Image (cartoon, rainbow, N blue to C red; front, side, top):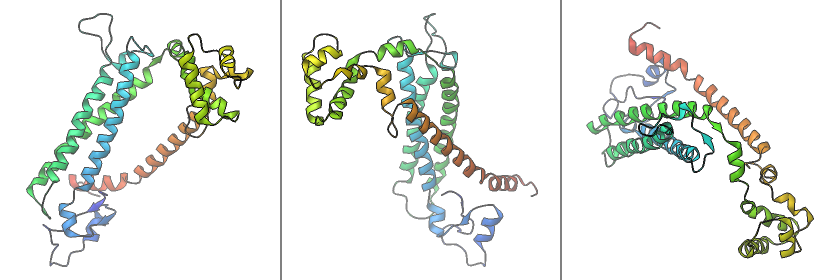
Length: 288
């Protein structure tokens, strides 16, 4: 979108001189020249789209930061706060604050604000060049300056986290979280899902004790002897191996596809290094 040369568009209507915008575009390493002179001068869609991408990325980083804040809290205790995640409390000696995660949340509002700032500048502008668009670069540069450090900081924090597997296992030990598995167990034995859902819901509502195989069989004979195998979190996780699921097998496949996509993107971006270097040397006045 941005790899288009605007040279030759003039202020809005091109030129009466016999210039060739395609020649300057090739010389400067652009993929193409502009198609319409007014669009070349007034369009800022590439900035708006770029800022939206950064804002959306910041929103996702904020969500990840929120998870880390919760997981590092005493109430959850799923991860042990590492030095890379934050500093110690200025008041409480025993406390380590998840500063990186909290700042990831905080920076998001600023980046979203940059997007809104640009869109507001572009709102209701008449065609061709207007002095208003001088304000287009500040929010773009600011958003980049905010997002890149957050990416670096979160990458360092994530790679240093120590997960408390015992605490996670305890949190997943309540058999009630496997209610959907129980309903699907009945479905696999021919029970319509609506009925299976109602049966499990009624059992959990009326049950006052532990959720276990014997009480399930006493409640409804359609629960067989093998229902005990359903009441295990690790087994439940391993069985969810459909495409995109959370089982270790499915997640490995997702990671493989993600790495492949990243490799393709890196290759694609590498194709733009040479044109960018050409433009950089020309701007610096260096010989080719």
